[in-house]
Length: 513
Image 1 (cartoon, one colour):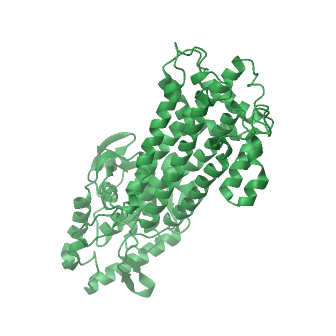
Image 2: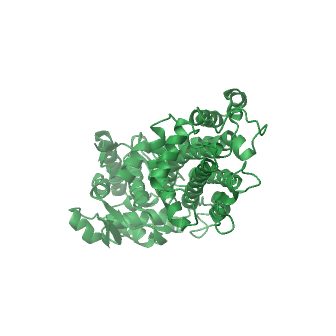
């Protein structure tokens, strides 16, 4: 069933269905009417000879240069061709598809003045799987994502490179194979296509989608570490978390109690200690704070995916064309910088739990570095090194891009958001955090197995939920008795996090908040 867009009520779930699952897209009938009305208004203004930015003038510093009616098509084409300055590795397909859909959804609102047939061609490209090759680097985030969105528009006019059925080829060839006629841009259309925040929002929305799932995985990983380290569950008592009142903290504490219910390893009271270290005891406070941050980002993304962010903006009913700054990415830049920190913290505390499991001075009686053959074997020593490396790397990426700005376009565009950099570095942090949590899952499973080996019967004393998680892990990866090529095993854990199989299996047995 197709996702029907009208510029007003697209959801994150629908965006992901199109971006990742190949769901088709359709324009609503009301959207078609609104697009036609705005286009007629633009054509009437053009006919009357009125001076309107980007329609009858140049762009940026050239806003004071008047353009004749005869030159408007050249103006729009040149805008796209000249702005395709992005460089570097190409964005993943899921990001490009998301950006294309978001651009279509913004245009569907009827405030951009694009022709219906141009918008429909972009939708046809999504549905046929014609994805322009969009390099990652080169956006300042104001006037929106000019360079990356221009690369998308380049494919629309039959130029540049695209991916079609997994193969990179010339856009003209792919469009012919797909039975789609490239567009010859008319007045205002270039600006309507490349002004906006859709690339940064596409990347950030994809990261957010995975981060929401990672928050649950982090709770499961922490619970398995609690099993391995004889954790004290009293710290998760509902009463103390309600007393503080933060929603994320309350939810994490509830998750941990539900996951650990029935465990005879992690218990409300332990004879050997009064309280746990912060990396265990404060899991609800740390994970919960990150969850609350993600909730804010979720609200911001939901607004932006239904926003009109090009310039100028057309109001046919009010007989106005207003040149403003909705393309400025600051709202998303701040949100994605916040998201970077939130995701990084899942890994930060996870690495500390790994350290406690491998360090014989901290591990509640576990063999040093989780090996029975210490000295001959290094066990999990360097797995923790790798986690520490990625945690430290993420601290660099977590530096807020939004606090920086650099003037452009002859100082006409003298404050920019760097929001696309925020989104891209958020994706890097997400990857690191997924890998660190993969290391924690493997480490915790090893620690539980070793407790069993030294006679503690830890496996049979797992809670029903952690036993399910442990058994799923063991279907993918055997315990490490003697040193192996760790990379190969760690990749399995990274994969089970990224493909959703681990979380899906666990959630069959517990309702995670």
